[in-house]
Length: 305
Image 1 (cartoon, rainbow, N blue to C red):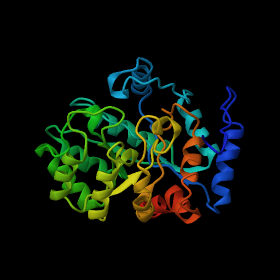
Image 2 (cartoon, rainbow, N blue to C red):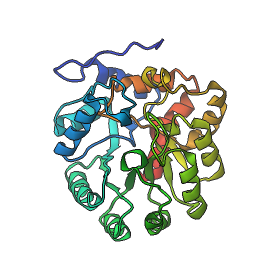
Image 3 (cartoon, rainbow, N blue to C red):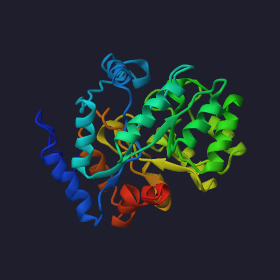
Image 4 (tube, rainbow, N blue to C red):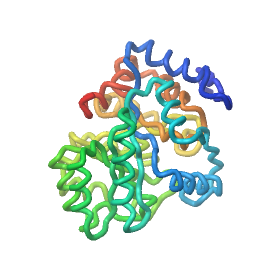
C-alpha cells in the first residue's frame, strides 16, 4: 500500500494535489521539478490517443486506463506549473511515414508559445529523415522522442543511422520507448537498442519507463554506455507494480545509476493522479540526494536549465 495518500483531482483543478506536489519538492530544497516525459501534441492527435486508451487497444495491454487529465491544452500546461514543474516536454511521435515533419512543425510552434516546454521533435525510419531531423536541430530542438512500440519499427533500421549519428554528434537526448511494456511490439526489448548503441555509443538515449519490464537488461546498457539514461515514467506506481513489478534485487543498481535517472510521468495520460509518481519514488527510500538528482538536478544539468 502507498504510505502517502493521494488527494483526488477535482473538476475545479488540482487543488490539494498541487499543494502536495509542492510539499514534495519543497522538502527536498528544490526550485521545482523537471519532467522529461509529458505529452503535448496536436489536439486531434491527442484525442485519437485518448480514444485508443478508452477502447483498451492492444498496445495498452488491454488494460483499463482512465485518463486523469483531459483538460484542454493551456489548462494542462497550467496544471503542471501548479505542481511546480519548471520544465517539461512535448513527447509526440508518428505511427506511419509522412507524419514526423508535420509533428515537428507543430512542436516548434508549441515551444515558441510555451517557454517552459523543452522544444521537442520526433523521427521515423523513412526517406528524408536525416534532413528533417537536421532541420529540427537547427530550429532549436532540445530533445527528441522515439516510440518503437507505436511506430512498429526497428530502431536499428539503416534509414535511421544518419539521424542517430547527427543526434549523437549534437548531444541531443532522445527519449525512447523501447521496452516491452505494457505490451510487447515486434521491435521492443533491449536487443535492437543494443545494436543502435554499438554503432552510436555516444547517443544520449533516455530509456522511457526504466525499460519496463526489461528493467535489468536496460540497466546493463546504462552501466555499459555512459550517455544512456533512464526515465521513471510510471515505474514503481501501484498501477505498474501490479503488472510489471520492479525486481527489488535491482534497487542497488538503480541507486548507483542515480546521476542518470530522470523524472518522467506520462502526463496527461495517467490512470492515477500525478503526485502518485512522486510518492512512488519517495517510498523507494533511496534517500533525499537521490530524489533531488532524479526529480530535478540530472535533467537541469542535461538541458542546461
